[in-house]
Length: 116
Image (cartoon, rainbow, N blue to C red; front, side, top):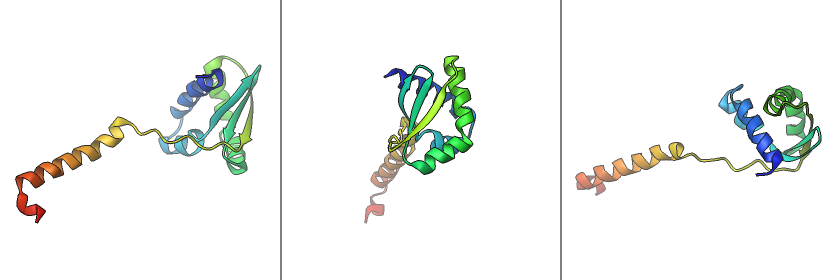
C-alpha cells in the first residue's frame, strides 16, 4: 500500500464514523487516492459532478479527517477520470443467502413431494 493509499484509508475510516453508511458509500467510498506530495493530496473521482459536489459538501470533513489522521494541514485537489472501486462484499453480507439456500435444500430433501 502506498503512502497516499494508507493516508486515505485511515482518513476515510474516520469519515465513515461521522456519517451514515449510505452517505459514506455514495460520496466518500468512491474517492480514489491518487498522490500526495509535501502538503498536497490529490484524490480521484469519476467526473466533474462528483468533484464539485464533494468539494462543496464534504471537503471540510475530508480536510478535518486528513488533519486528524496525519496531524498535518493538507491542500486537497480532485482529479476527474477515476472509476469508483468495486464494492467489497463481506462474508457476513453473503452468509444469509447461503444459509437460506441450505435450509431450502434440506427442506426439499425431507419433503420430496415439494420437488414435483
